[in-house]
Length: 171
Ligand code: AMP
Image 1 (cartoon, rainbow, N blue to C red):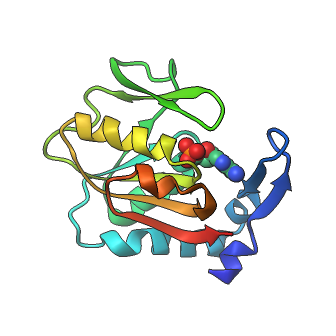
Image 2: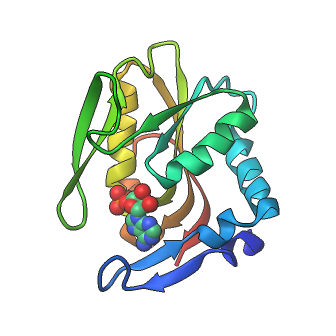
């Protein structure tokens, strides 16, 4: 994991003052490191009968798609409002400053689905909690929530009600 951590770059004051943005683009550019990340994300869920990976827009799409291919299951996008073309269910949630929303196609998951939700990073937890609610409201079983990075000082875990895995924890 040290090798993976060395490929994540801190960008101070992006996108606004006071935020240290975790830039994963050097990690994305390294094929061997991305293969290791995919293996590590898959580890808890091999032989768990996962039917769908739900990825959170946009960086969750990258890791989620790789994980879906690795586990041999389908992928479901959770998107910002107005992006999905079919009928949607929507969840509004609170961010550190302001609000945001996520949508899912209403037929994307159902009672037969066993789902893991993926994003690049857990901060305050609002995004992941909204994603879990959307998937659970579809009748699916949420087996777990996975991120590459957890910012532990923001205590996002307090909003989560399913098993959570992160590959790297900061600080
Ligand atoms: P939150 O809902 O506060 O847990 O925020 C998580 C979402 O915001 C994820 O989709 C992240 O990609 C993004 N995010 C929040 N904080 C950061 C950060 N410091 N660096 C990179 N992405 C972040």
